[in-house]
Length: 544
Figure (cartoon, rainbow, N blue to C red):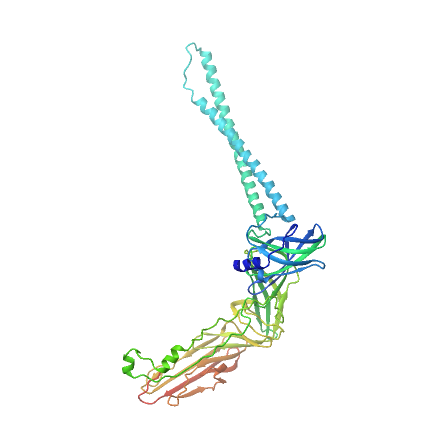
């Protein structure tokens, strides 16, 4: 960025202008991409006279990229060269908003209250210290009497010491009674001050690390407006879903959509018009490039030639060595500024606040509903229960973007998943947790030879398994049971399958050897599937 800034300063130097107009900007609109954001700012300034001036906007974020900045003035206002100043920045005022002014006044009031409470504690402590000192002085009297002391004088002195000591002790005790309320008042004042300071700190603040935008403008006398659009990193949004599957009254999938918006640009966004775009200006914007791949052949080398360590090079070898090597070129990355085009955007209807670096703002989007096909899917080889799976078509006109999702079945949270992108009109499949009422198992019966399950010899191997499913619930479920057998692409490796009943689908979803049985399993019903296979291969071969 610094190098680019130096080039801009060198090539677009501002003309010498008669006066400098300092100004600040207000963020009015933000378009957030999955990585980065487009910021629209308005700068209102007052020109003292018609003609050319230098406008100095002193609150641009330090990470602003000058090459990705666009300016637009009011009718009758034109601008020329502009640059960003990263150093030698002029001092700027930090005007407070009405909320900040009120919060700061409250902090100052409570600071005064804290000092008053502290002074009260110190005054009570001074009374205690004075009374204790007086009592200590009286206690230090050693009883020495003057030579001409009379009994009456001694008695009077003793009475005085007794009276004064009692008075001092009582004064100290009374002061100590006042100390606790004074300390409590100080503690309360300090707590109130801390809360008021936290409230002030929580209000939107301006970026402490900033740069200044210097623009040569030609404007009429009076107030004018300049709109600045620039792009910045440190902002993002991501989708979040609540998926609720219900079967009562017909299968229905409700997709509650929301987004989480976060930003760490260094400045708070307050009352901005927010748009979320699915465009990715920071990602690859052009197809990857393929480079010609030259292949060649060379004569085989004998063992003696190999032993020589390649001391001699054949003509073909020399040609290979001289041939240029095509290096893998990096895929071009283009920042397509403002190219939202036909991409999906979401405009939030109300102004929002997004604090920098401290929160994820969650905004709700509209709801999408689908009529899914719901099936209980069982994989007895690995699982002990079936799982609820919903297949649906995205009938909306916009894609479902990749994002986190919470899964609800009949309104009860059953888990979470990562939703993959689903284009408009595309099919998708989502699992909605275990179905404990449908129990499954895979048993290996004992063979005649006393062996269980898998039997193998030198050129033959076989396996028999019994798949069992049982519906312990009170409702019928459409069920799909999935298992597998090995497959071969060699004629010499023969594989025969014996399945009762026969599978509904073979090579499920194009996967060789994956079998599926589909049927309805009524409440309280059981179903068994026998699956066996046999493999044979020639002698002298090894099964892998």
